[in-house]
Length: 79
Image (cartoon, rainbow, N blue to C red; front, side, top):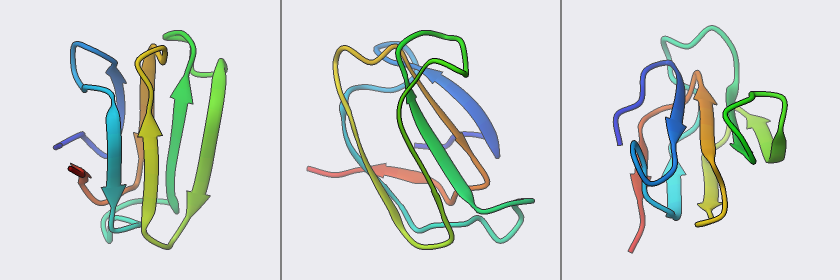
């Protein structure tokens, strides 16, 4: 999944539910790898989130509305 350095992906349109993995912080990113599952397109409506330099894994559920990510290596769907 190729998302720009800062991306808001709509579930069911830009990204499908499932488990995704990123290698961690993008070397070109300005900060640590951050992601958030959102209950709406409002970036403050956070269901779950994390920030780290380490590899990241996230389960995007069918009830999620959007996925926000920045400064992460590309996300790859598992399975």
